[in-house]
View 1 (cartoon, rainbow, N blue to C red):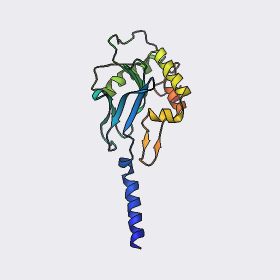
View 2 (view 1 turned 45 degrees about the vertical axis):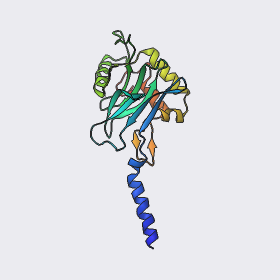
View 3 (view 1 turned 180 degrees about the vertical axis):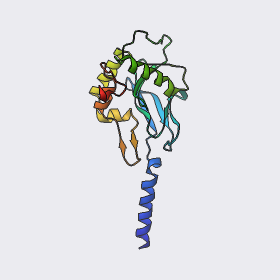
View 4 (view 1 turned 180 degrees about the horizontal axis):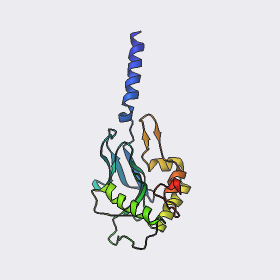
Length: 199
């Protein structure tokens, strides 16, 4: 009887501690078949302000703010290994932004994505609020970048997408990721709304 209770207690503790023990803490950013950078977050679930740090080797190149309900969902490293796209679930929008480390990086004045100017302004201003600890330029993606990421997502397997993603619901023993169709809506070149499901 004592052994049975010990097993029950151990099982309950394992379930209670699983959000810490089995929390997804790293995402590998791959390009050209190799790991370019690594996104890392705390071992402990964040109920207040936290952050996801992206490292190139041992150097932190940028951080993205997160809390219990807002976090970066997906990362994509471009082949030049100097631009990183992030899809971020934020309070006010599903943000899509690029952190650009090229010497020639500039904000394109004629950028027309998303199509609605108010959505574009909202996403651009929020992106600079959720990204910090960086020397890179924080900007909205251009249409070529969106098409490249869309093509990758359309051809990627669920496992490949999950490898580049943090789960929006992470209970340790169960992870729930944003699906391919959801991410494709976020990077659609004809997107108009801060919340793409309302297009």
